[in-house]
Amino acid sequence: MVAYTYAFSGFAVPDIDAARTFYRDVVGLDVTDAMMGQLSIDLPGGGWVLVYPKPDHEPAVYTMLNLEVDDIETAVDELAGRGVEFQRYAGMDQDARGIARGIATGQGPDIAWFTDPAGNIIAVLQNPPGDGA
Image (cartoon, rainbow, N blue to C red):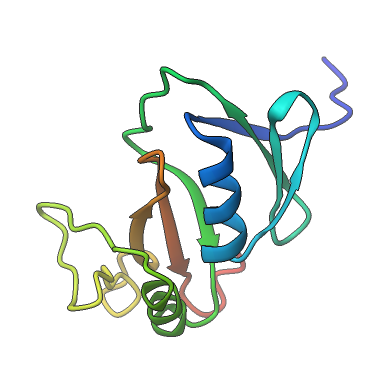
């Protein structure tokens, strides 16, 4: 069996400066410049993500980053106040804020989606109490 010593994730964006500003000033994550024009985003809980420039980038068509919160209404309102526009998806029952309610129905977390300046999909979500995720 392979003995992995460390793991991290990464994703591409076409504009590192726009990504730095968005993830630091809008989303509120710790962002630092890394080598070769890349960014490092420290995630709550100890993980991190490498963000690298790719001029011919095409946005992910799936949620590529999930940010768990204790209070989704507050998180959505704060992000909207910083200019975030929440996505609407056909077939998803979303409220006026763009939140799909899963906790009340037992169908998973309450979740809302938005995109970064590169079009990558991000979710802010609140897990059911006692979920431990």
